[in-house]
Length: 279
Image (cartoon, rainbow, N blue to C red; front, side, top):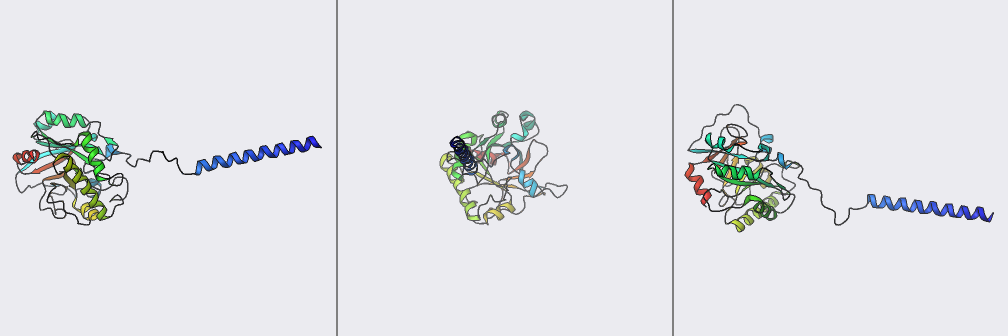
């Protein structure tokens, strides 16, 4: 009887330990992640986020479009990693005079084709600049401006480099305005713009579509006095300008055409592109 009681007690003890261990495992599994765990990166397909990728989804062309520029327009293009290695000699031979090249997105992505595109366009005589695809819900505007500058988005007075460009369009990962209120969005854009200016002495060009700008900034904020505008509209004319801009500096008029990537017109002759490059 004593031996049986002892075995019963030991068995009960082992069962209690097993239950406690199981509960401990459940607690670890269901509990909060460790304090030093890396945050989930919401930027999951940056190679598909080019300048106008979301415009084409939200405001596609309505049919065959005839482009009738009102003043002298100078042709150009914008490209990203989506185009891969670009034949820049062919682009120049077909009449392009300037290009914008995607450099970065958020603070986690740099285009693997940036060097070929940015340096290659320069080598054939195009005036080129770099652009940053904004994700205002992942970090501050100033932080993203610093990342952009550190990865190809700077500026130099060499006569061949356009000021960096900030791409503001619909969120490819969720809510159109990245979950920000209009005032918060304006503050984010100002943070990027001010930091870029402080670091380079140039105000960045802002790329957007008029309807996104109205929806996500609430038509507040004074950017027109400093920031040149690149407007996206694929329906035959630049259309109405976003809040306070009287005209566009560059018009992205199609998402395909003669050149690789998107098709652009600079609002003026080549001397005006040179003037923008020279500051």
